[in-house]
Length: 294
Ligand code: FAD
Image (cartoon, rainbow, N blue to C red; front, side, top):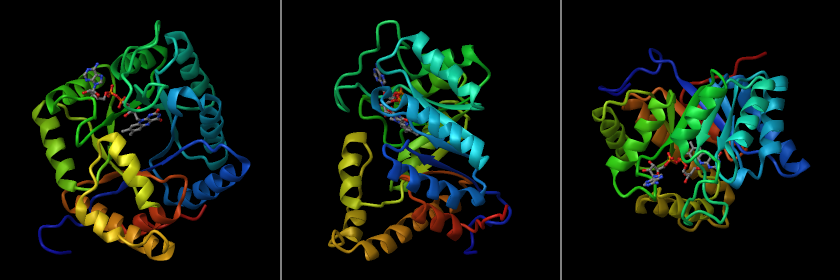
């Protein structure tokens, strides 16, 4: 190990993988192939997102249920409070518990009208993510994770407001934050410092987005407040019609990012898999993880 770097062996890595609920039987098949490929890496948990405006309520439920029952991996279900009453949200929480979910990723969510529209709480609904966390905790003793934004959320006027929201979520019972994706590790490190200075000490787990499609990712990033550095754009320049090279570059970029975070003392990683195993698997392999045969 280069000097000043943390030894991989002495600090156990914990990874988690995020999936979205499949829309079609074909997508279901590829999701499942990815789950089976990644499961032997023994993630701490996998998580399943909740579609915008609660549009995937049933599919999120069915997906976590299948992962818990068939893959035997702890699965966290995402949940938002968009367009639903408290009673409706509480009913979803109870239905998660019935299939063995003990961990919920609680988000405010975005307006059904789309990202960028002003968020208005549902009449009779939870007003924000902190209120939702408190509601979940009233339903049962769930582990609750929440979001964090190293470059601040697009709606936050400043970091102080952003971190105040995180504090409220922690006070309501959240014990882990998972970050929006980012590509400049200095943003992450500076954010964690701000959070610690604010007296918040829960793990801030970096969310890593392996880049399966640079052009698509850049469009998405601009809506979420994640910046795309010029050096990153340069690396993918001209690869639109060269999927093979795109894949190799993406693996190198993500491995480099994760290695660098590791050298800064990070032991926990959350991967936005996009329901594909190849890049996440390769990065975990580079980090020294090996599959455990069942
Ligand atoms: P919050 O934590 O409540 O707020 C985010 C920030 O916005 C705050 O820090 C605060 O500074 C600012 N803010 C919020 N309200 C106000 C206000 N009234 N005044 C001033 N500032 C305010 N979306 C989904 O639909 N489904 C998912 O499954 C999903 N999973 C996600 C997982 C992760 C790890 C992350 C990072 C995001 C996820 N999202 C998901 C996206 C999320 O719903 C959006 O980013 C949404 O815009 C904010 O929800 P939140 O819980 O992060 O918001």
